[in-house]
Length: 64
Image 1: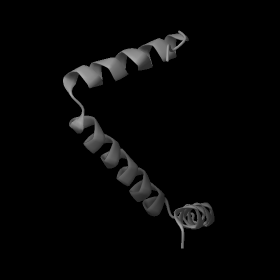
Image 2: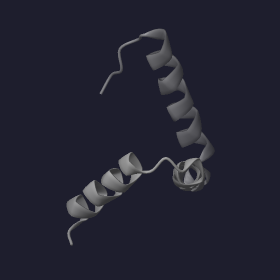
Image 3: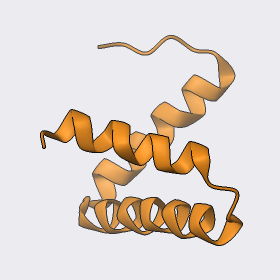
């Protein structure tokens, strides 16, 4: 099965479940992955991202 099919299958399973424990477990997996990526960034990269988020929250245009 290719990655897109796997994603669609996961989406289907999530949509069909009413088990909050499963939904929380999936959310926690994504949260832990984000934390690991953040730790791999340099302090300068983290600061840059924080500044971009603050600007986006204020509605400032991002310069690419």
